[in-house]
Length: 521
Image (cartoon, rainbow, N blue to C red; front, side, top):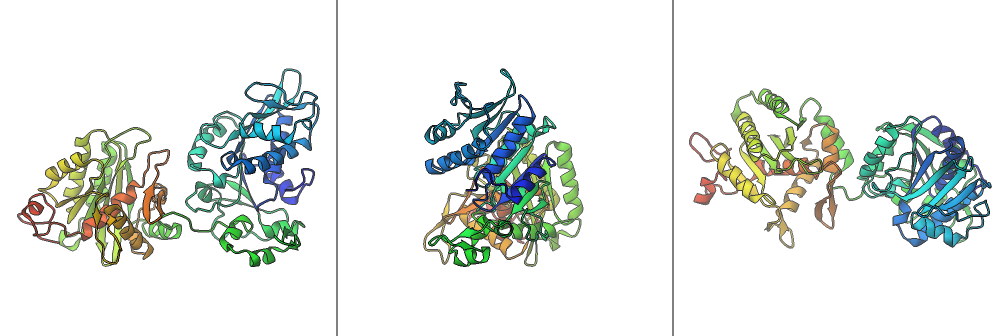
C-alpha cells in the first residue's frame, strides 16, 4: 500500500479532475492507493465546507474480516497523515469522541477496525466548537447510501446490485450542484456488472502510457481516469515478484501470471468480456446494430401507445401473408407495481436462416382482459403460424388465453419446469433450459436481429448461465429477462410441431394450424 505521504502522479491528476467533474471514476491497478486518494478527496471537501457530509461507501465490509481490517488500516493511515487537533474519530452511533486528546493517532488499529466493521466510524473536522464537517463510513448498498452529501464509492466493481445503488444515489447528486460522486475500482470479473457498462472506455479510445494516467468519457457519460500497471511503472511504481520480492516490469509480471484474464483486469485495467452472462455483449451489439430501422421495442404505458405499436406492425406486414413465417411468444405478467416484471410479446419473423424480431412489446396491467385483447389484435395484424405462452406461473390465465385465441391461431402452452428428453443430453432437461439454449445458439451464430433499444440489451444481460442452468434475478425496475423469454417462446412458435395431427385434443385446442380456411405453415 502506498505511503499516505507519497503523492503519485495519477493521484495528483485525479485530485485535479474531481474538482472539474461532479461525477468521476478512478480506474486504477491493484494496490495503487485508491483508498488513500479517496480519503484525501474527502478531507479536502471537509476542510473546504463547514457542516458538509461525505459518505464513504465500502464494499469490503461484505468481503470478510481480514479485508475489512486492511481497508480500515489504509483509511486510518490516510487520515492520520493529515491529522490536526480539529480532526476527531467519532462513534457515529453514540456521538462519542474516540480520540479525546485531539489527533486521531491515539486510537488503536483494532479499535479503529471494529468501528469500521460496525459502520459506526465517523471522521469529524471541527471548524468551530459547534460546526464540523464529517466523513461517514457505510456499507455500500442501497439502504446505506441514502444520506445527502458527497459520495465516495470504493471498489464498485465488486458491489452486488450496483445498478440499484447507482439508481439510489443519482437523485442525491442531482439535488445539489455542490455534491459530487466518485467511483473507485478495477474492472469487474463479470461483464454483466453495471460498472462494466458505466465505466468502460469507448471502443477505439487512444490511451497511451502516461505516468498520470489517461482521462476518457465512458459511453454513459462518466469521466474516468485510468491508471494501468504501465502508467504506474512509468511513474516509478513497479510490481514485485511473489517469491523474491524483486521489482518487475508489467510485461514480466504478466508473463509469470497463471490467470492472464485476472491480470488484465487487475493490473492492465482491461474490461475483459466474459463471466456468467448467457448473452455475449458483442453478439448482442451486433444483433441490435442490425436491427436499426428493421426492428423496434415498444414500452406501452397506455392504449394510445399500444395503437402506435399495432400501426407499426400493420405497416410491416402488408406483403402477402403466404410469404411470411411468423411466430409469437408471450411471457405473461398481470401486475402493475413498479418492481413487478412486465408482460412481453415478441413478433419473430423467419427469413431463411435469419430471425428478425420485428417488434417486442412490453406492458404492465392488472386487467387480464386488456392483456388478452392486446394479444388478440397483434394476432389479427400478423397472422402467425403459432403463439407460444409461458404457462409456468400463471397457468389458469394461460389456459383461458388458449381457449379465447384458439380459433385465431394455434396456441401452445409452454411450462418451463417440465422436462424433455433431448438427443445427446445424458439426462432430461427442463423446457426453460432447452428453449434458452436454442435462443442463445441463434444469437451466437449471428442469426438474430433485435431492437436496438438499451432496455432490451439490459434485460437480456440479466439472464445468466450458472452450472448449466439459466437463471435471472430481477432488477430494481422489475425486469426479469422478460424480453429474452418472450423471444425464446417466439422461436419455439416458429419451430414447434406439438400436437400436429396427433391427437384430437391437440387439434381442438389449437396446438396445430388446422382450422377451416387455413393450412399448415
